[in-house]
Image (tube, rainbow, N blue to C red):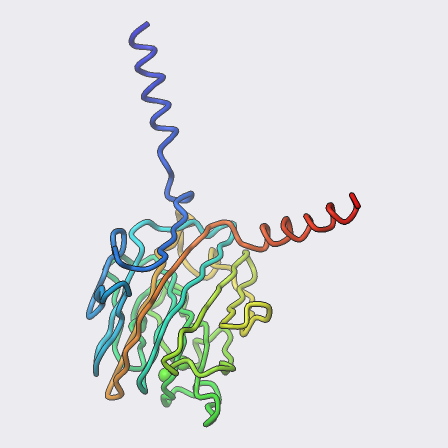
Length: 258
Ligand SMILES: [Ca+2]
Ligand SMILES: [Ca+2]
């Protein structure tokens, strides 16, 4: 009897334990970096994650629990960048929690295998990157070489665009990335209008045997220096569009009751 009860309690506790796939994450700020792995020059600065603050640097920060991506996800974050180069990226990868890429044009992700980088690039390099203009010297690009080490060259871009606002103005930029299998959208500052849309199936492009990916940010500088900070971050394995359609249905019901 006792044994059965103990077994039931043990089973109950085991069932109550959160699984990695249900571990949605939300950092309102980074006054604590518990759960964040910092690599390279990355550091906690005040209540921010500081990716770079000088020349010839690279950094990566990873959430230490891989996140389920098979059914989709929504991630939101705010960042601030000032200075002239090079940029930062939101990265999904299955290399390791110590993965760290190259500085400068590499934006801290170049060289990380089995990765997809969504880069916010404000330094034009000689890789045939998106057309840069004086008004919009910013590129948002999805870079991947599948399971091979990633690289910022434009022939490894799935999709790219010129950002409508200056990425490195020093102002706070708000980003939302929505993914449902087959489709990825990137929003920056204008949340009702995606800046970039791409056909992407993460489980096809990358080798993710657990259907989970390590998620985080990378940053890089070269001869041009910049300060790049992540201010807050949330990641939800349930894509937001499901919630959006549910919320959109509520006013309809209310309207019908009138
Ligand atoms: Ca680029
Ligand atoms: Ca660049």
